Image 1: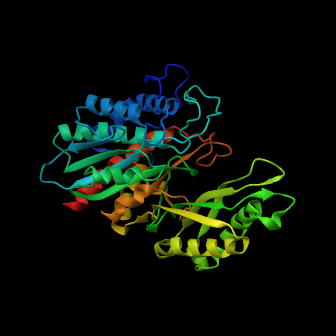
Image 2 (image 1 turned 120 degrees about the vertical axis):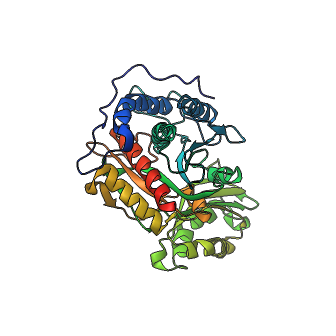
Image 3 (image 1 turned 90 degrees about the vertical axis):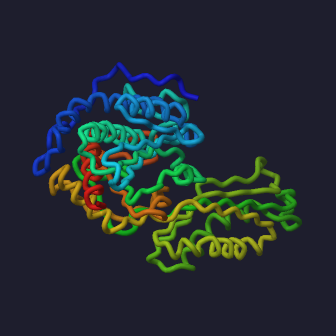
Amino acid sequence: MTSALTLPTSGQLASSWPETPPGSQPLPRELDHLLALRVPGLIATRRHLHSHPELSGNEFETAALIARELSLAGLNPRLLPKGNGVICDVNGRPDGPVVALRADIDALPLDDPKDVPYRSTVEGVCHACGHDVHTTVLLGVGMLLAQLADLGELDGRVRLIFQPAEEILPCGSLEVIEAGGLDDVVQIFALHCDPNLPVGQVGLRVGPITAAADNVTVRLSGPGGHTARPHLTVDMVDALGRLITEVPALVSRRVPANSGLLLVFGHASAGTRYNVIPSEASASGTLRVMDRDTWEQAPKIVAQVVRDVIAPTGATVDLEYLRGRPPVCNDARAIQVLTAATAAALGPDGIAETPQSMGGEDFSWYLEYVPGALARLGVGRSGPNVDLHRASFDVDERSIAVGVRVMVQTALRALAAAR
């Protein structure tokens, strides 16, 4: 587990963005001023989370920090049953609607090579997807909305969801749903860091914005034998080679080209000796697809193609197809709310069109139950940007204040629209 969480004291904080952007609207009750005062602390919190990451399912210290910060803001957070996630309602008008905002809090199993004061202190664990930013933004939103609630100016209830285990299967969103995270919720919203967008822009899209993503593992077995006599056994390395080179292309030929199906093996293993044909081999990877109909058919298609390709080799096939997450499909009305909120928070130039990504996001499971939308938060840095899920990924920290402004405006407009 990680060491005790303490805010970093070394290193100069990056420049913030406390100003109201040109063309935007101020937050109510001088919350912009409060946000400006909070920005240094929020950046310190993000750096603290970045230097003390926790893997999916083990976010216990992170959840404890979140609960403490929310309690200091006068709120009443509750931990998920496992203790590695947090749900917290900001209670406004009791007869008003309930709107949810979600942040994911887990990190990835990568070393952190960055030369920064907030580099990960946990070997082999790194916030390489921006979840530390998502968490910090939602904490900032909770602090500002708590102020509005205290003044009697929150038109309903805003549920803050700090979700564990976004990066693994089974998905953490399903744990949140089972724990009642969507009870009474009429809409749900989330942000995800996008290094391809500059700070001050938010990417929006109606309909699918991510791909479905499943895990595929194929295990092959046979008697094994001598490399001098492959005809007397099953050549497992040859079978594995056919699997990883032929199956992806053949699977894509079984579906419409515009479905965007992509099967990529990220791991393959067979044998330990140059002159021994192994008795086992395996490969695992991800299947991603852009439309829901093809996603429904994918397990059957993959199973048939794998059997057809491996059958001539004589190897025995054991296929494990693990359902991951459907595409995130943004609701049109929710995008209207986000569009108005982004324009209010950042001005009209803050709105950017964004393409559908081949990445997967378990926010999609929430949208199976209630309407909502995922937006992309610009975090691009000056110079070449590093993509998500690379260990050297980092953000322009001015994006934290931007994200807070957008999500506060989103919550207020969603509550007003749901009355």
